[in-house]
Picture 1 (cartoon, rainbow, N blue to C red):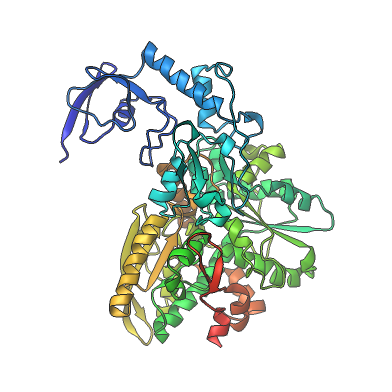
Picture 2: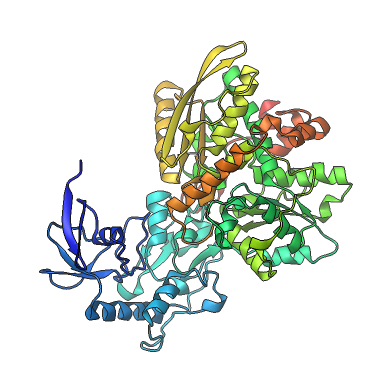
Length: 602
């Protein structure tokens, strides 16, 4: 049992574990000390000083976010001196901050704005000295506006501690301190993997997604264009919290209705190609298991992870599934299968995806993602961009009656829905791989061992494989790239030492919590929010009549009419891809490390 420390905060006694900070102890009492750089899921940087408190017997105010409790401490969190000091600190921050609140994407969600309003700060007390720093537009996914940066350090912490990418850092000292990339070359020329976690943790809107809403509106309003939209699994469970509904509520019918009101010509669902992905990836896994191919097979649904692999672990590229992500599979099918079935000119089709992920913008622009002869996906909107479009269209989302999507590419199973949570792709794959190997369905489709928010999860399943006997299959799941690095280091060491790994199949998601915690999700979410979103997806899965990807009638039909069978020649041409080795310094392509699986297969 941990040692307990007793102290008094604002006259209230409390006992907490040793190592707890004053700020954390105060929150346990329901006392909210004002803060700006602090985030409950990040290591404290103590950059802003707003969270200062007074401790009896200690000289000067103390930063509560990084000051551990001591036995007998008497802490005061609210005094005239503290109120004046905090107000001055916030006014100083504002003096070097571009106050463009009405037009800022973080307006209404900005922690600096909230703090300034609560404290009643004087905007004119200090002279405004905002430097005219250029916006970093070098990344296809994330825009960085240094004029709005308050040097809180959150983005640097999440990039280094949680993602272990180290694309950005604090440079200079004192009043000149700022966030920048190596050699100040811009995010697009850095080791950034486009995951966008920096945008979620940024308190002010200094980091945001590349905005594509105007491009999508232009396409919708062009009578010569046929605009088709898909939505990732996690979108249906994130919209609720943005429109005053209980977090974790699945709003799939309202989501479809909003998209139709906005004006999309066809409303489909990425869940359809999530099921398709499982059929292709499951077949790939089985071929490797039966044929002695490279194991483990590692999922390729997360583009942030894929670029991370290409940068830090290109030697494991051959272990990564050649399957495109569901987003890219959908884009390819829209401009081939859908166009053929509807007798449409694919050149007139504009393929739009709504994703929880900023890295999907990068993925859509990878030069190899055009196997149909056209770009698979033309525009990618994050959840935040979609919410802004709904609000711009003056749609009362909460009151919308549920509607259905269009036919052909919208049917899905529960297995597709749980793609949005960490462990979901693994669980969906196991359900269908078991069927394909054993010739029967699992008795219990709820695979609890791969669920939850542990950084790395492992499980061993025994599958009664036809012709192979009882087949033990060890799997692992990692979310957050620092956890992925730990797992990949282990796999690399095992392969170098013995020529093989203990794992058969590995799922990796770049973002903590999986897609429910993606870099394009609402600002300011904490891990607990991501867990509640994931629970909503599991509830939808549990209530569906069909919960396994091989049961999706639309997927069965697309193989019958177009793709022939999983792993066919046309499937390899349209649904599979290749990978590159990237420079650690600038992330640019250096050389191809895998060929098209179709070429390798033939």
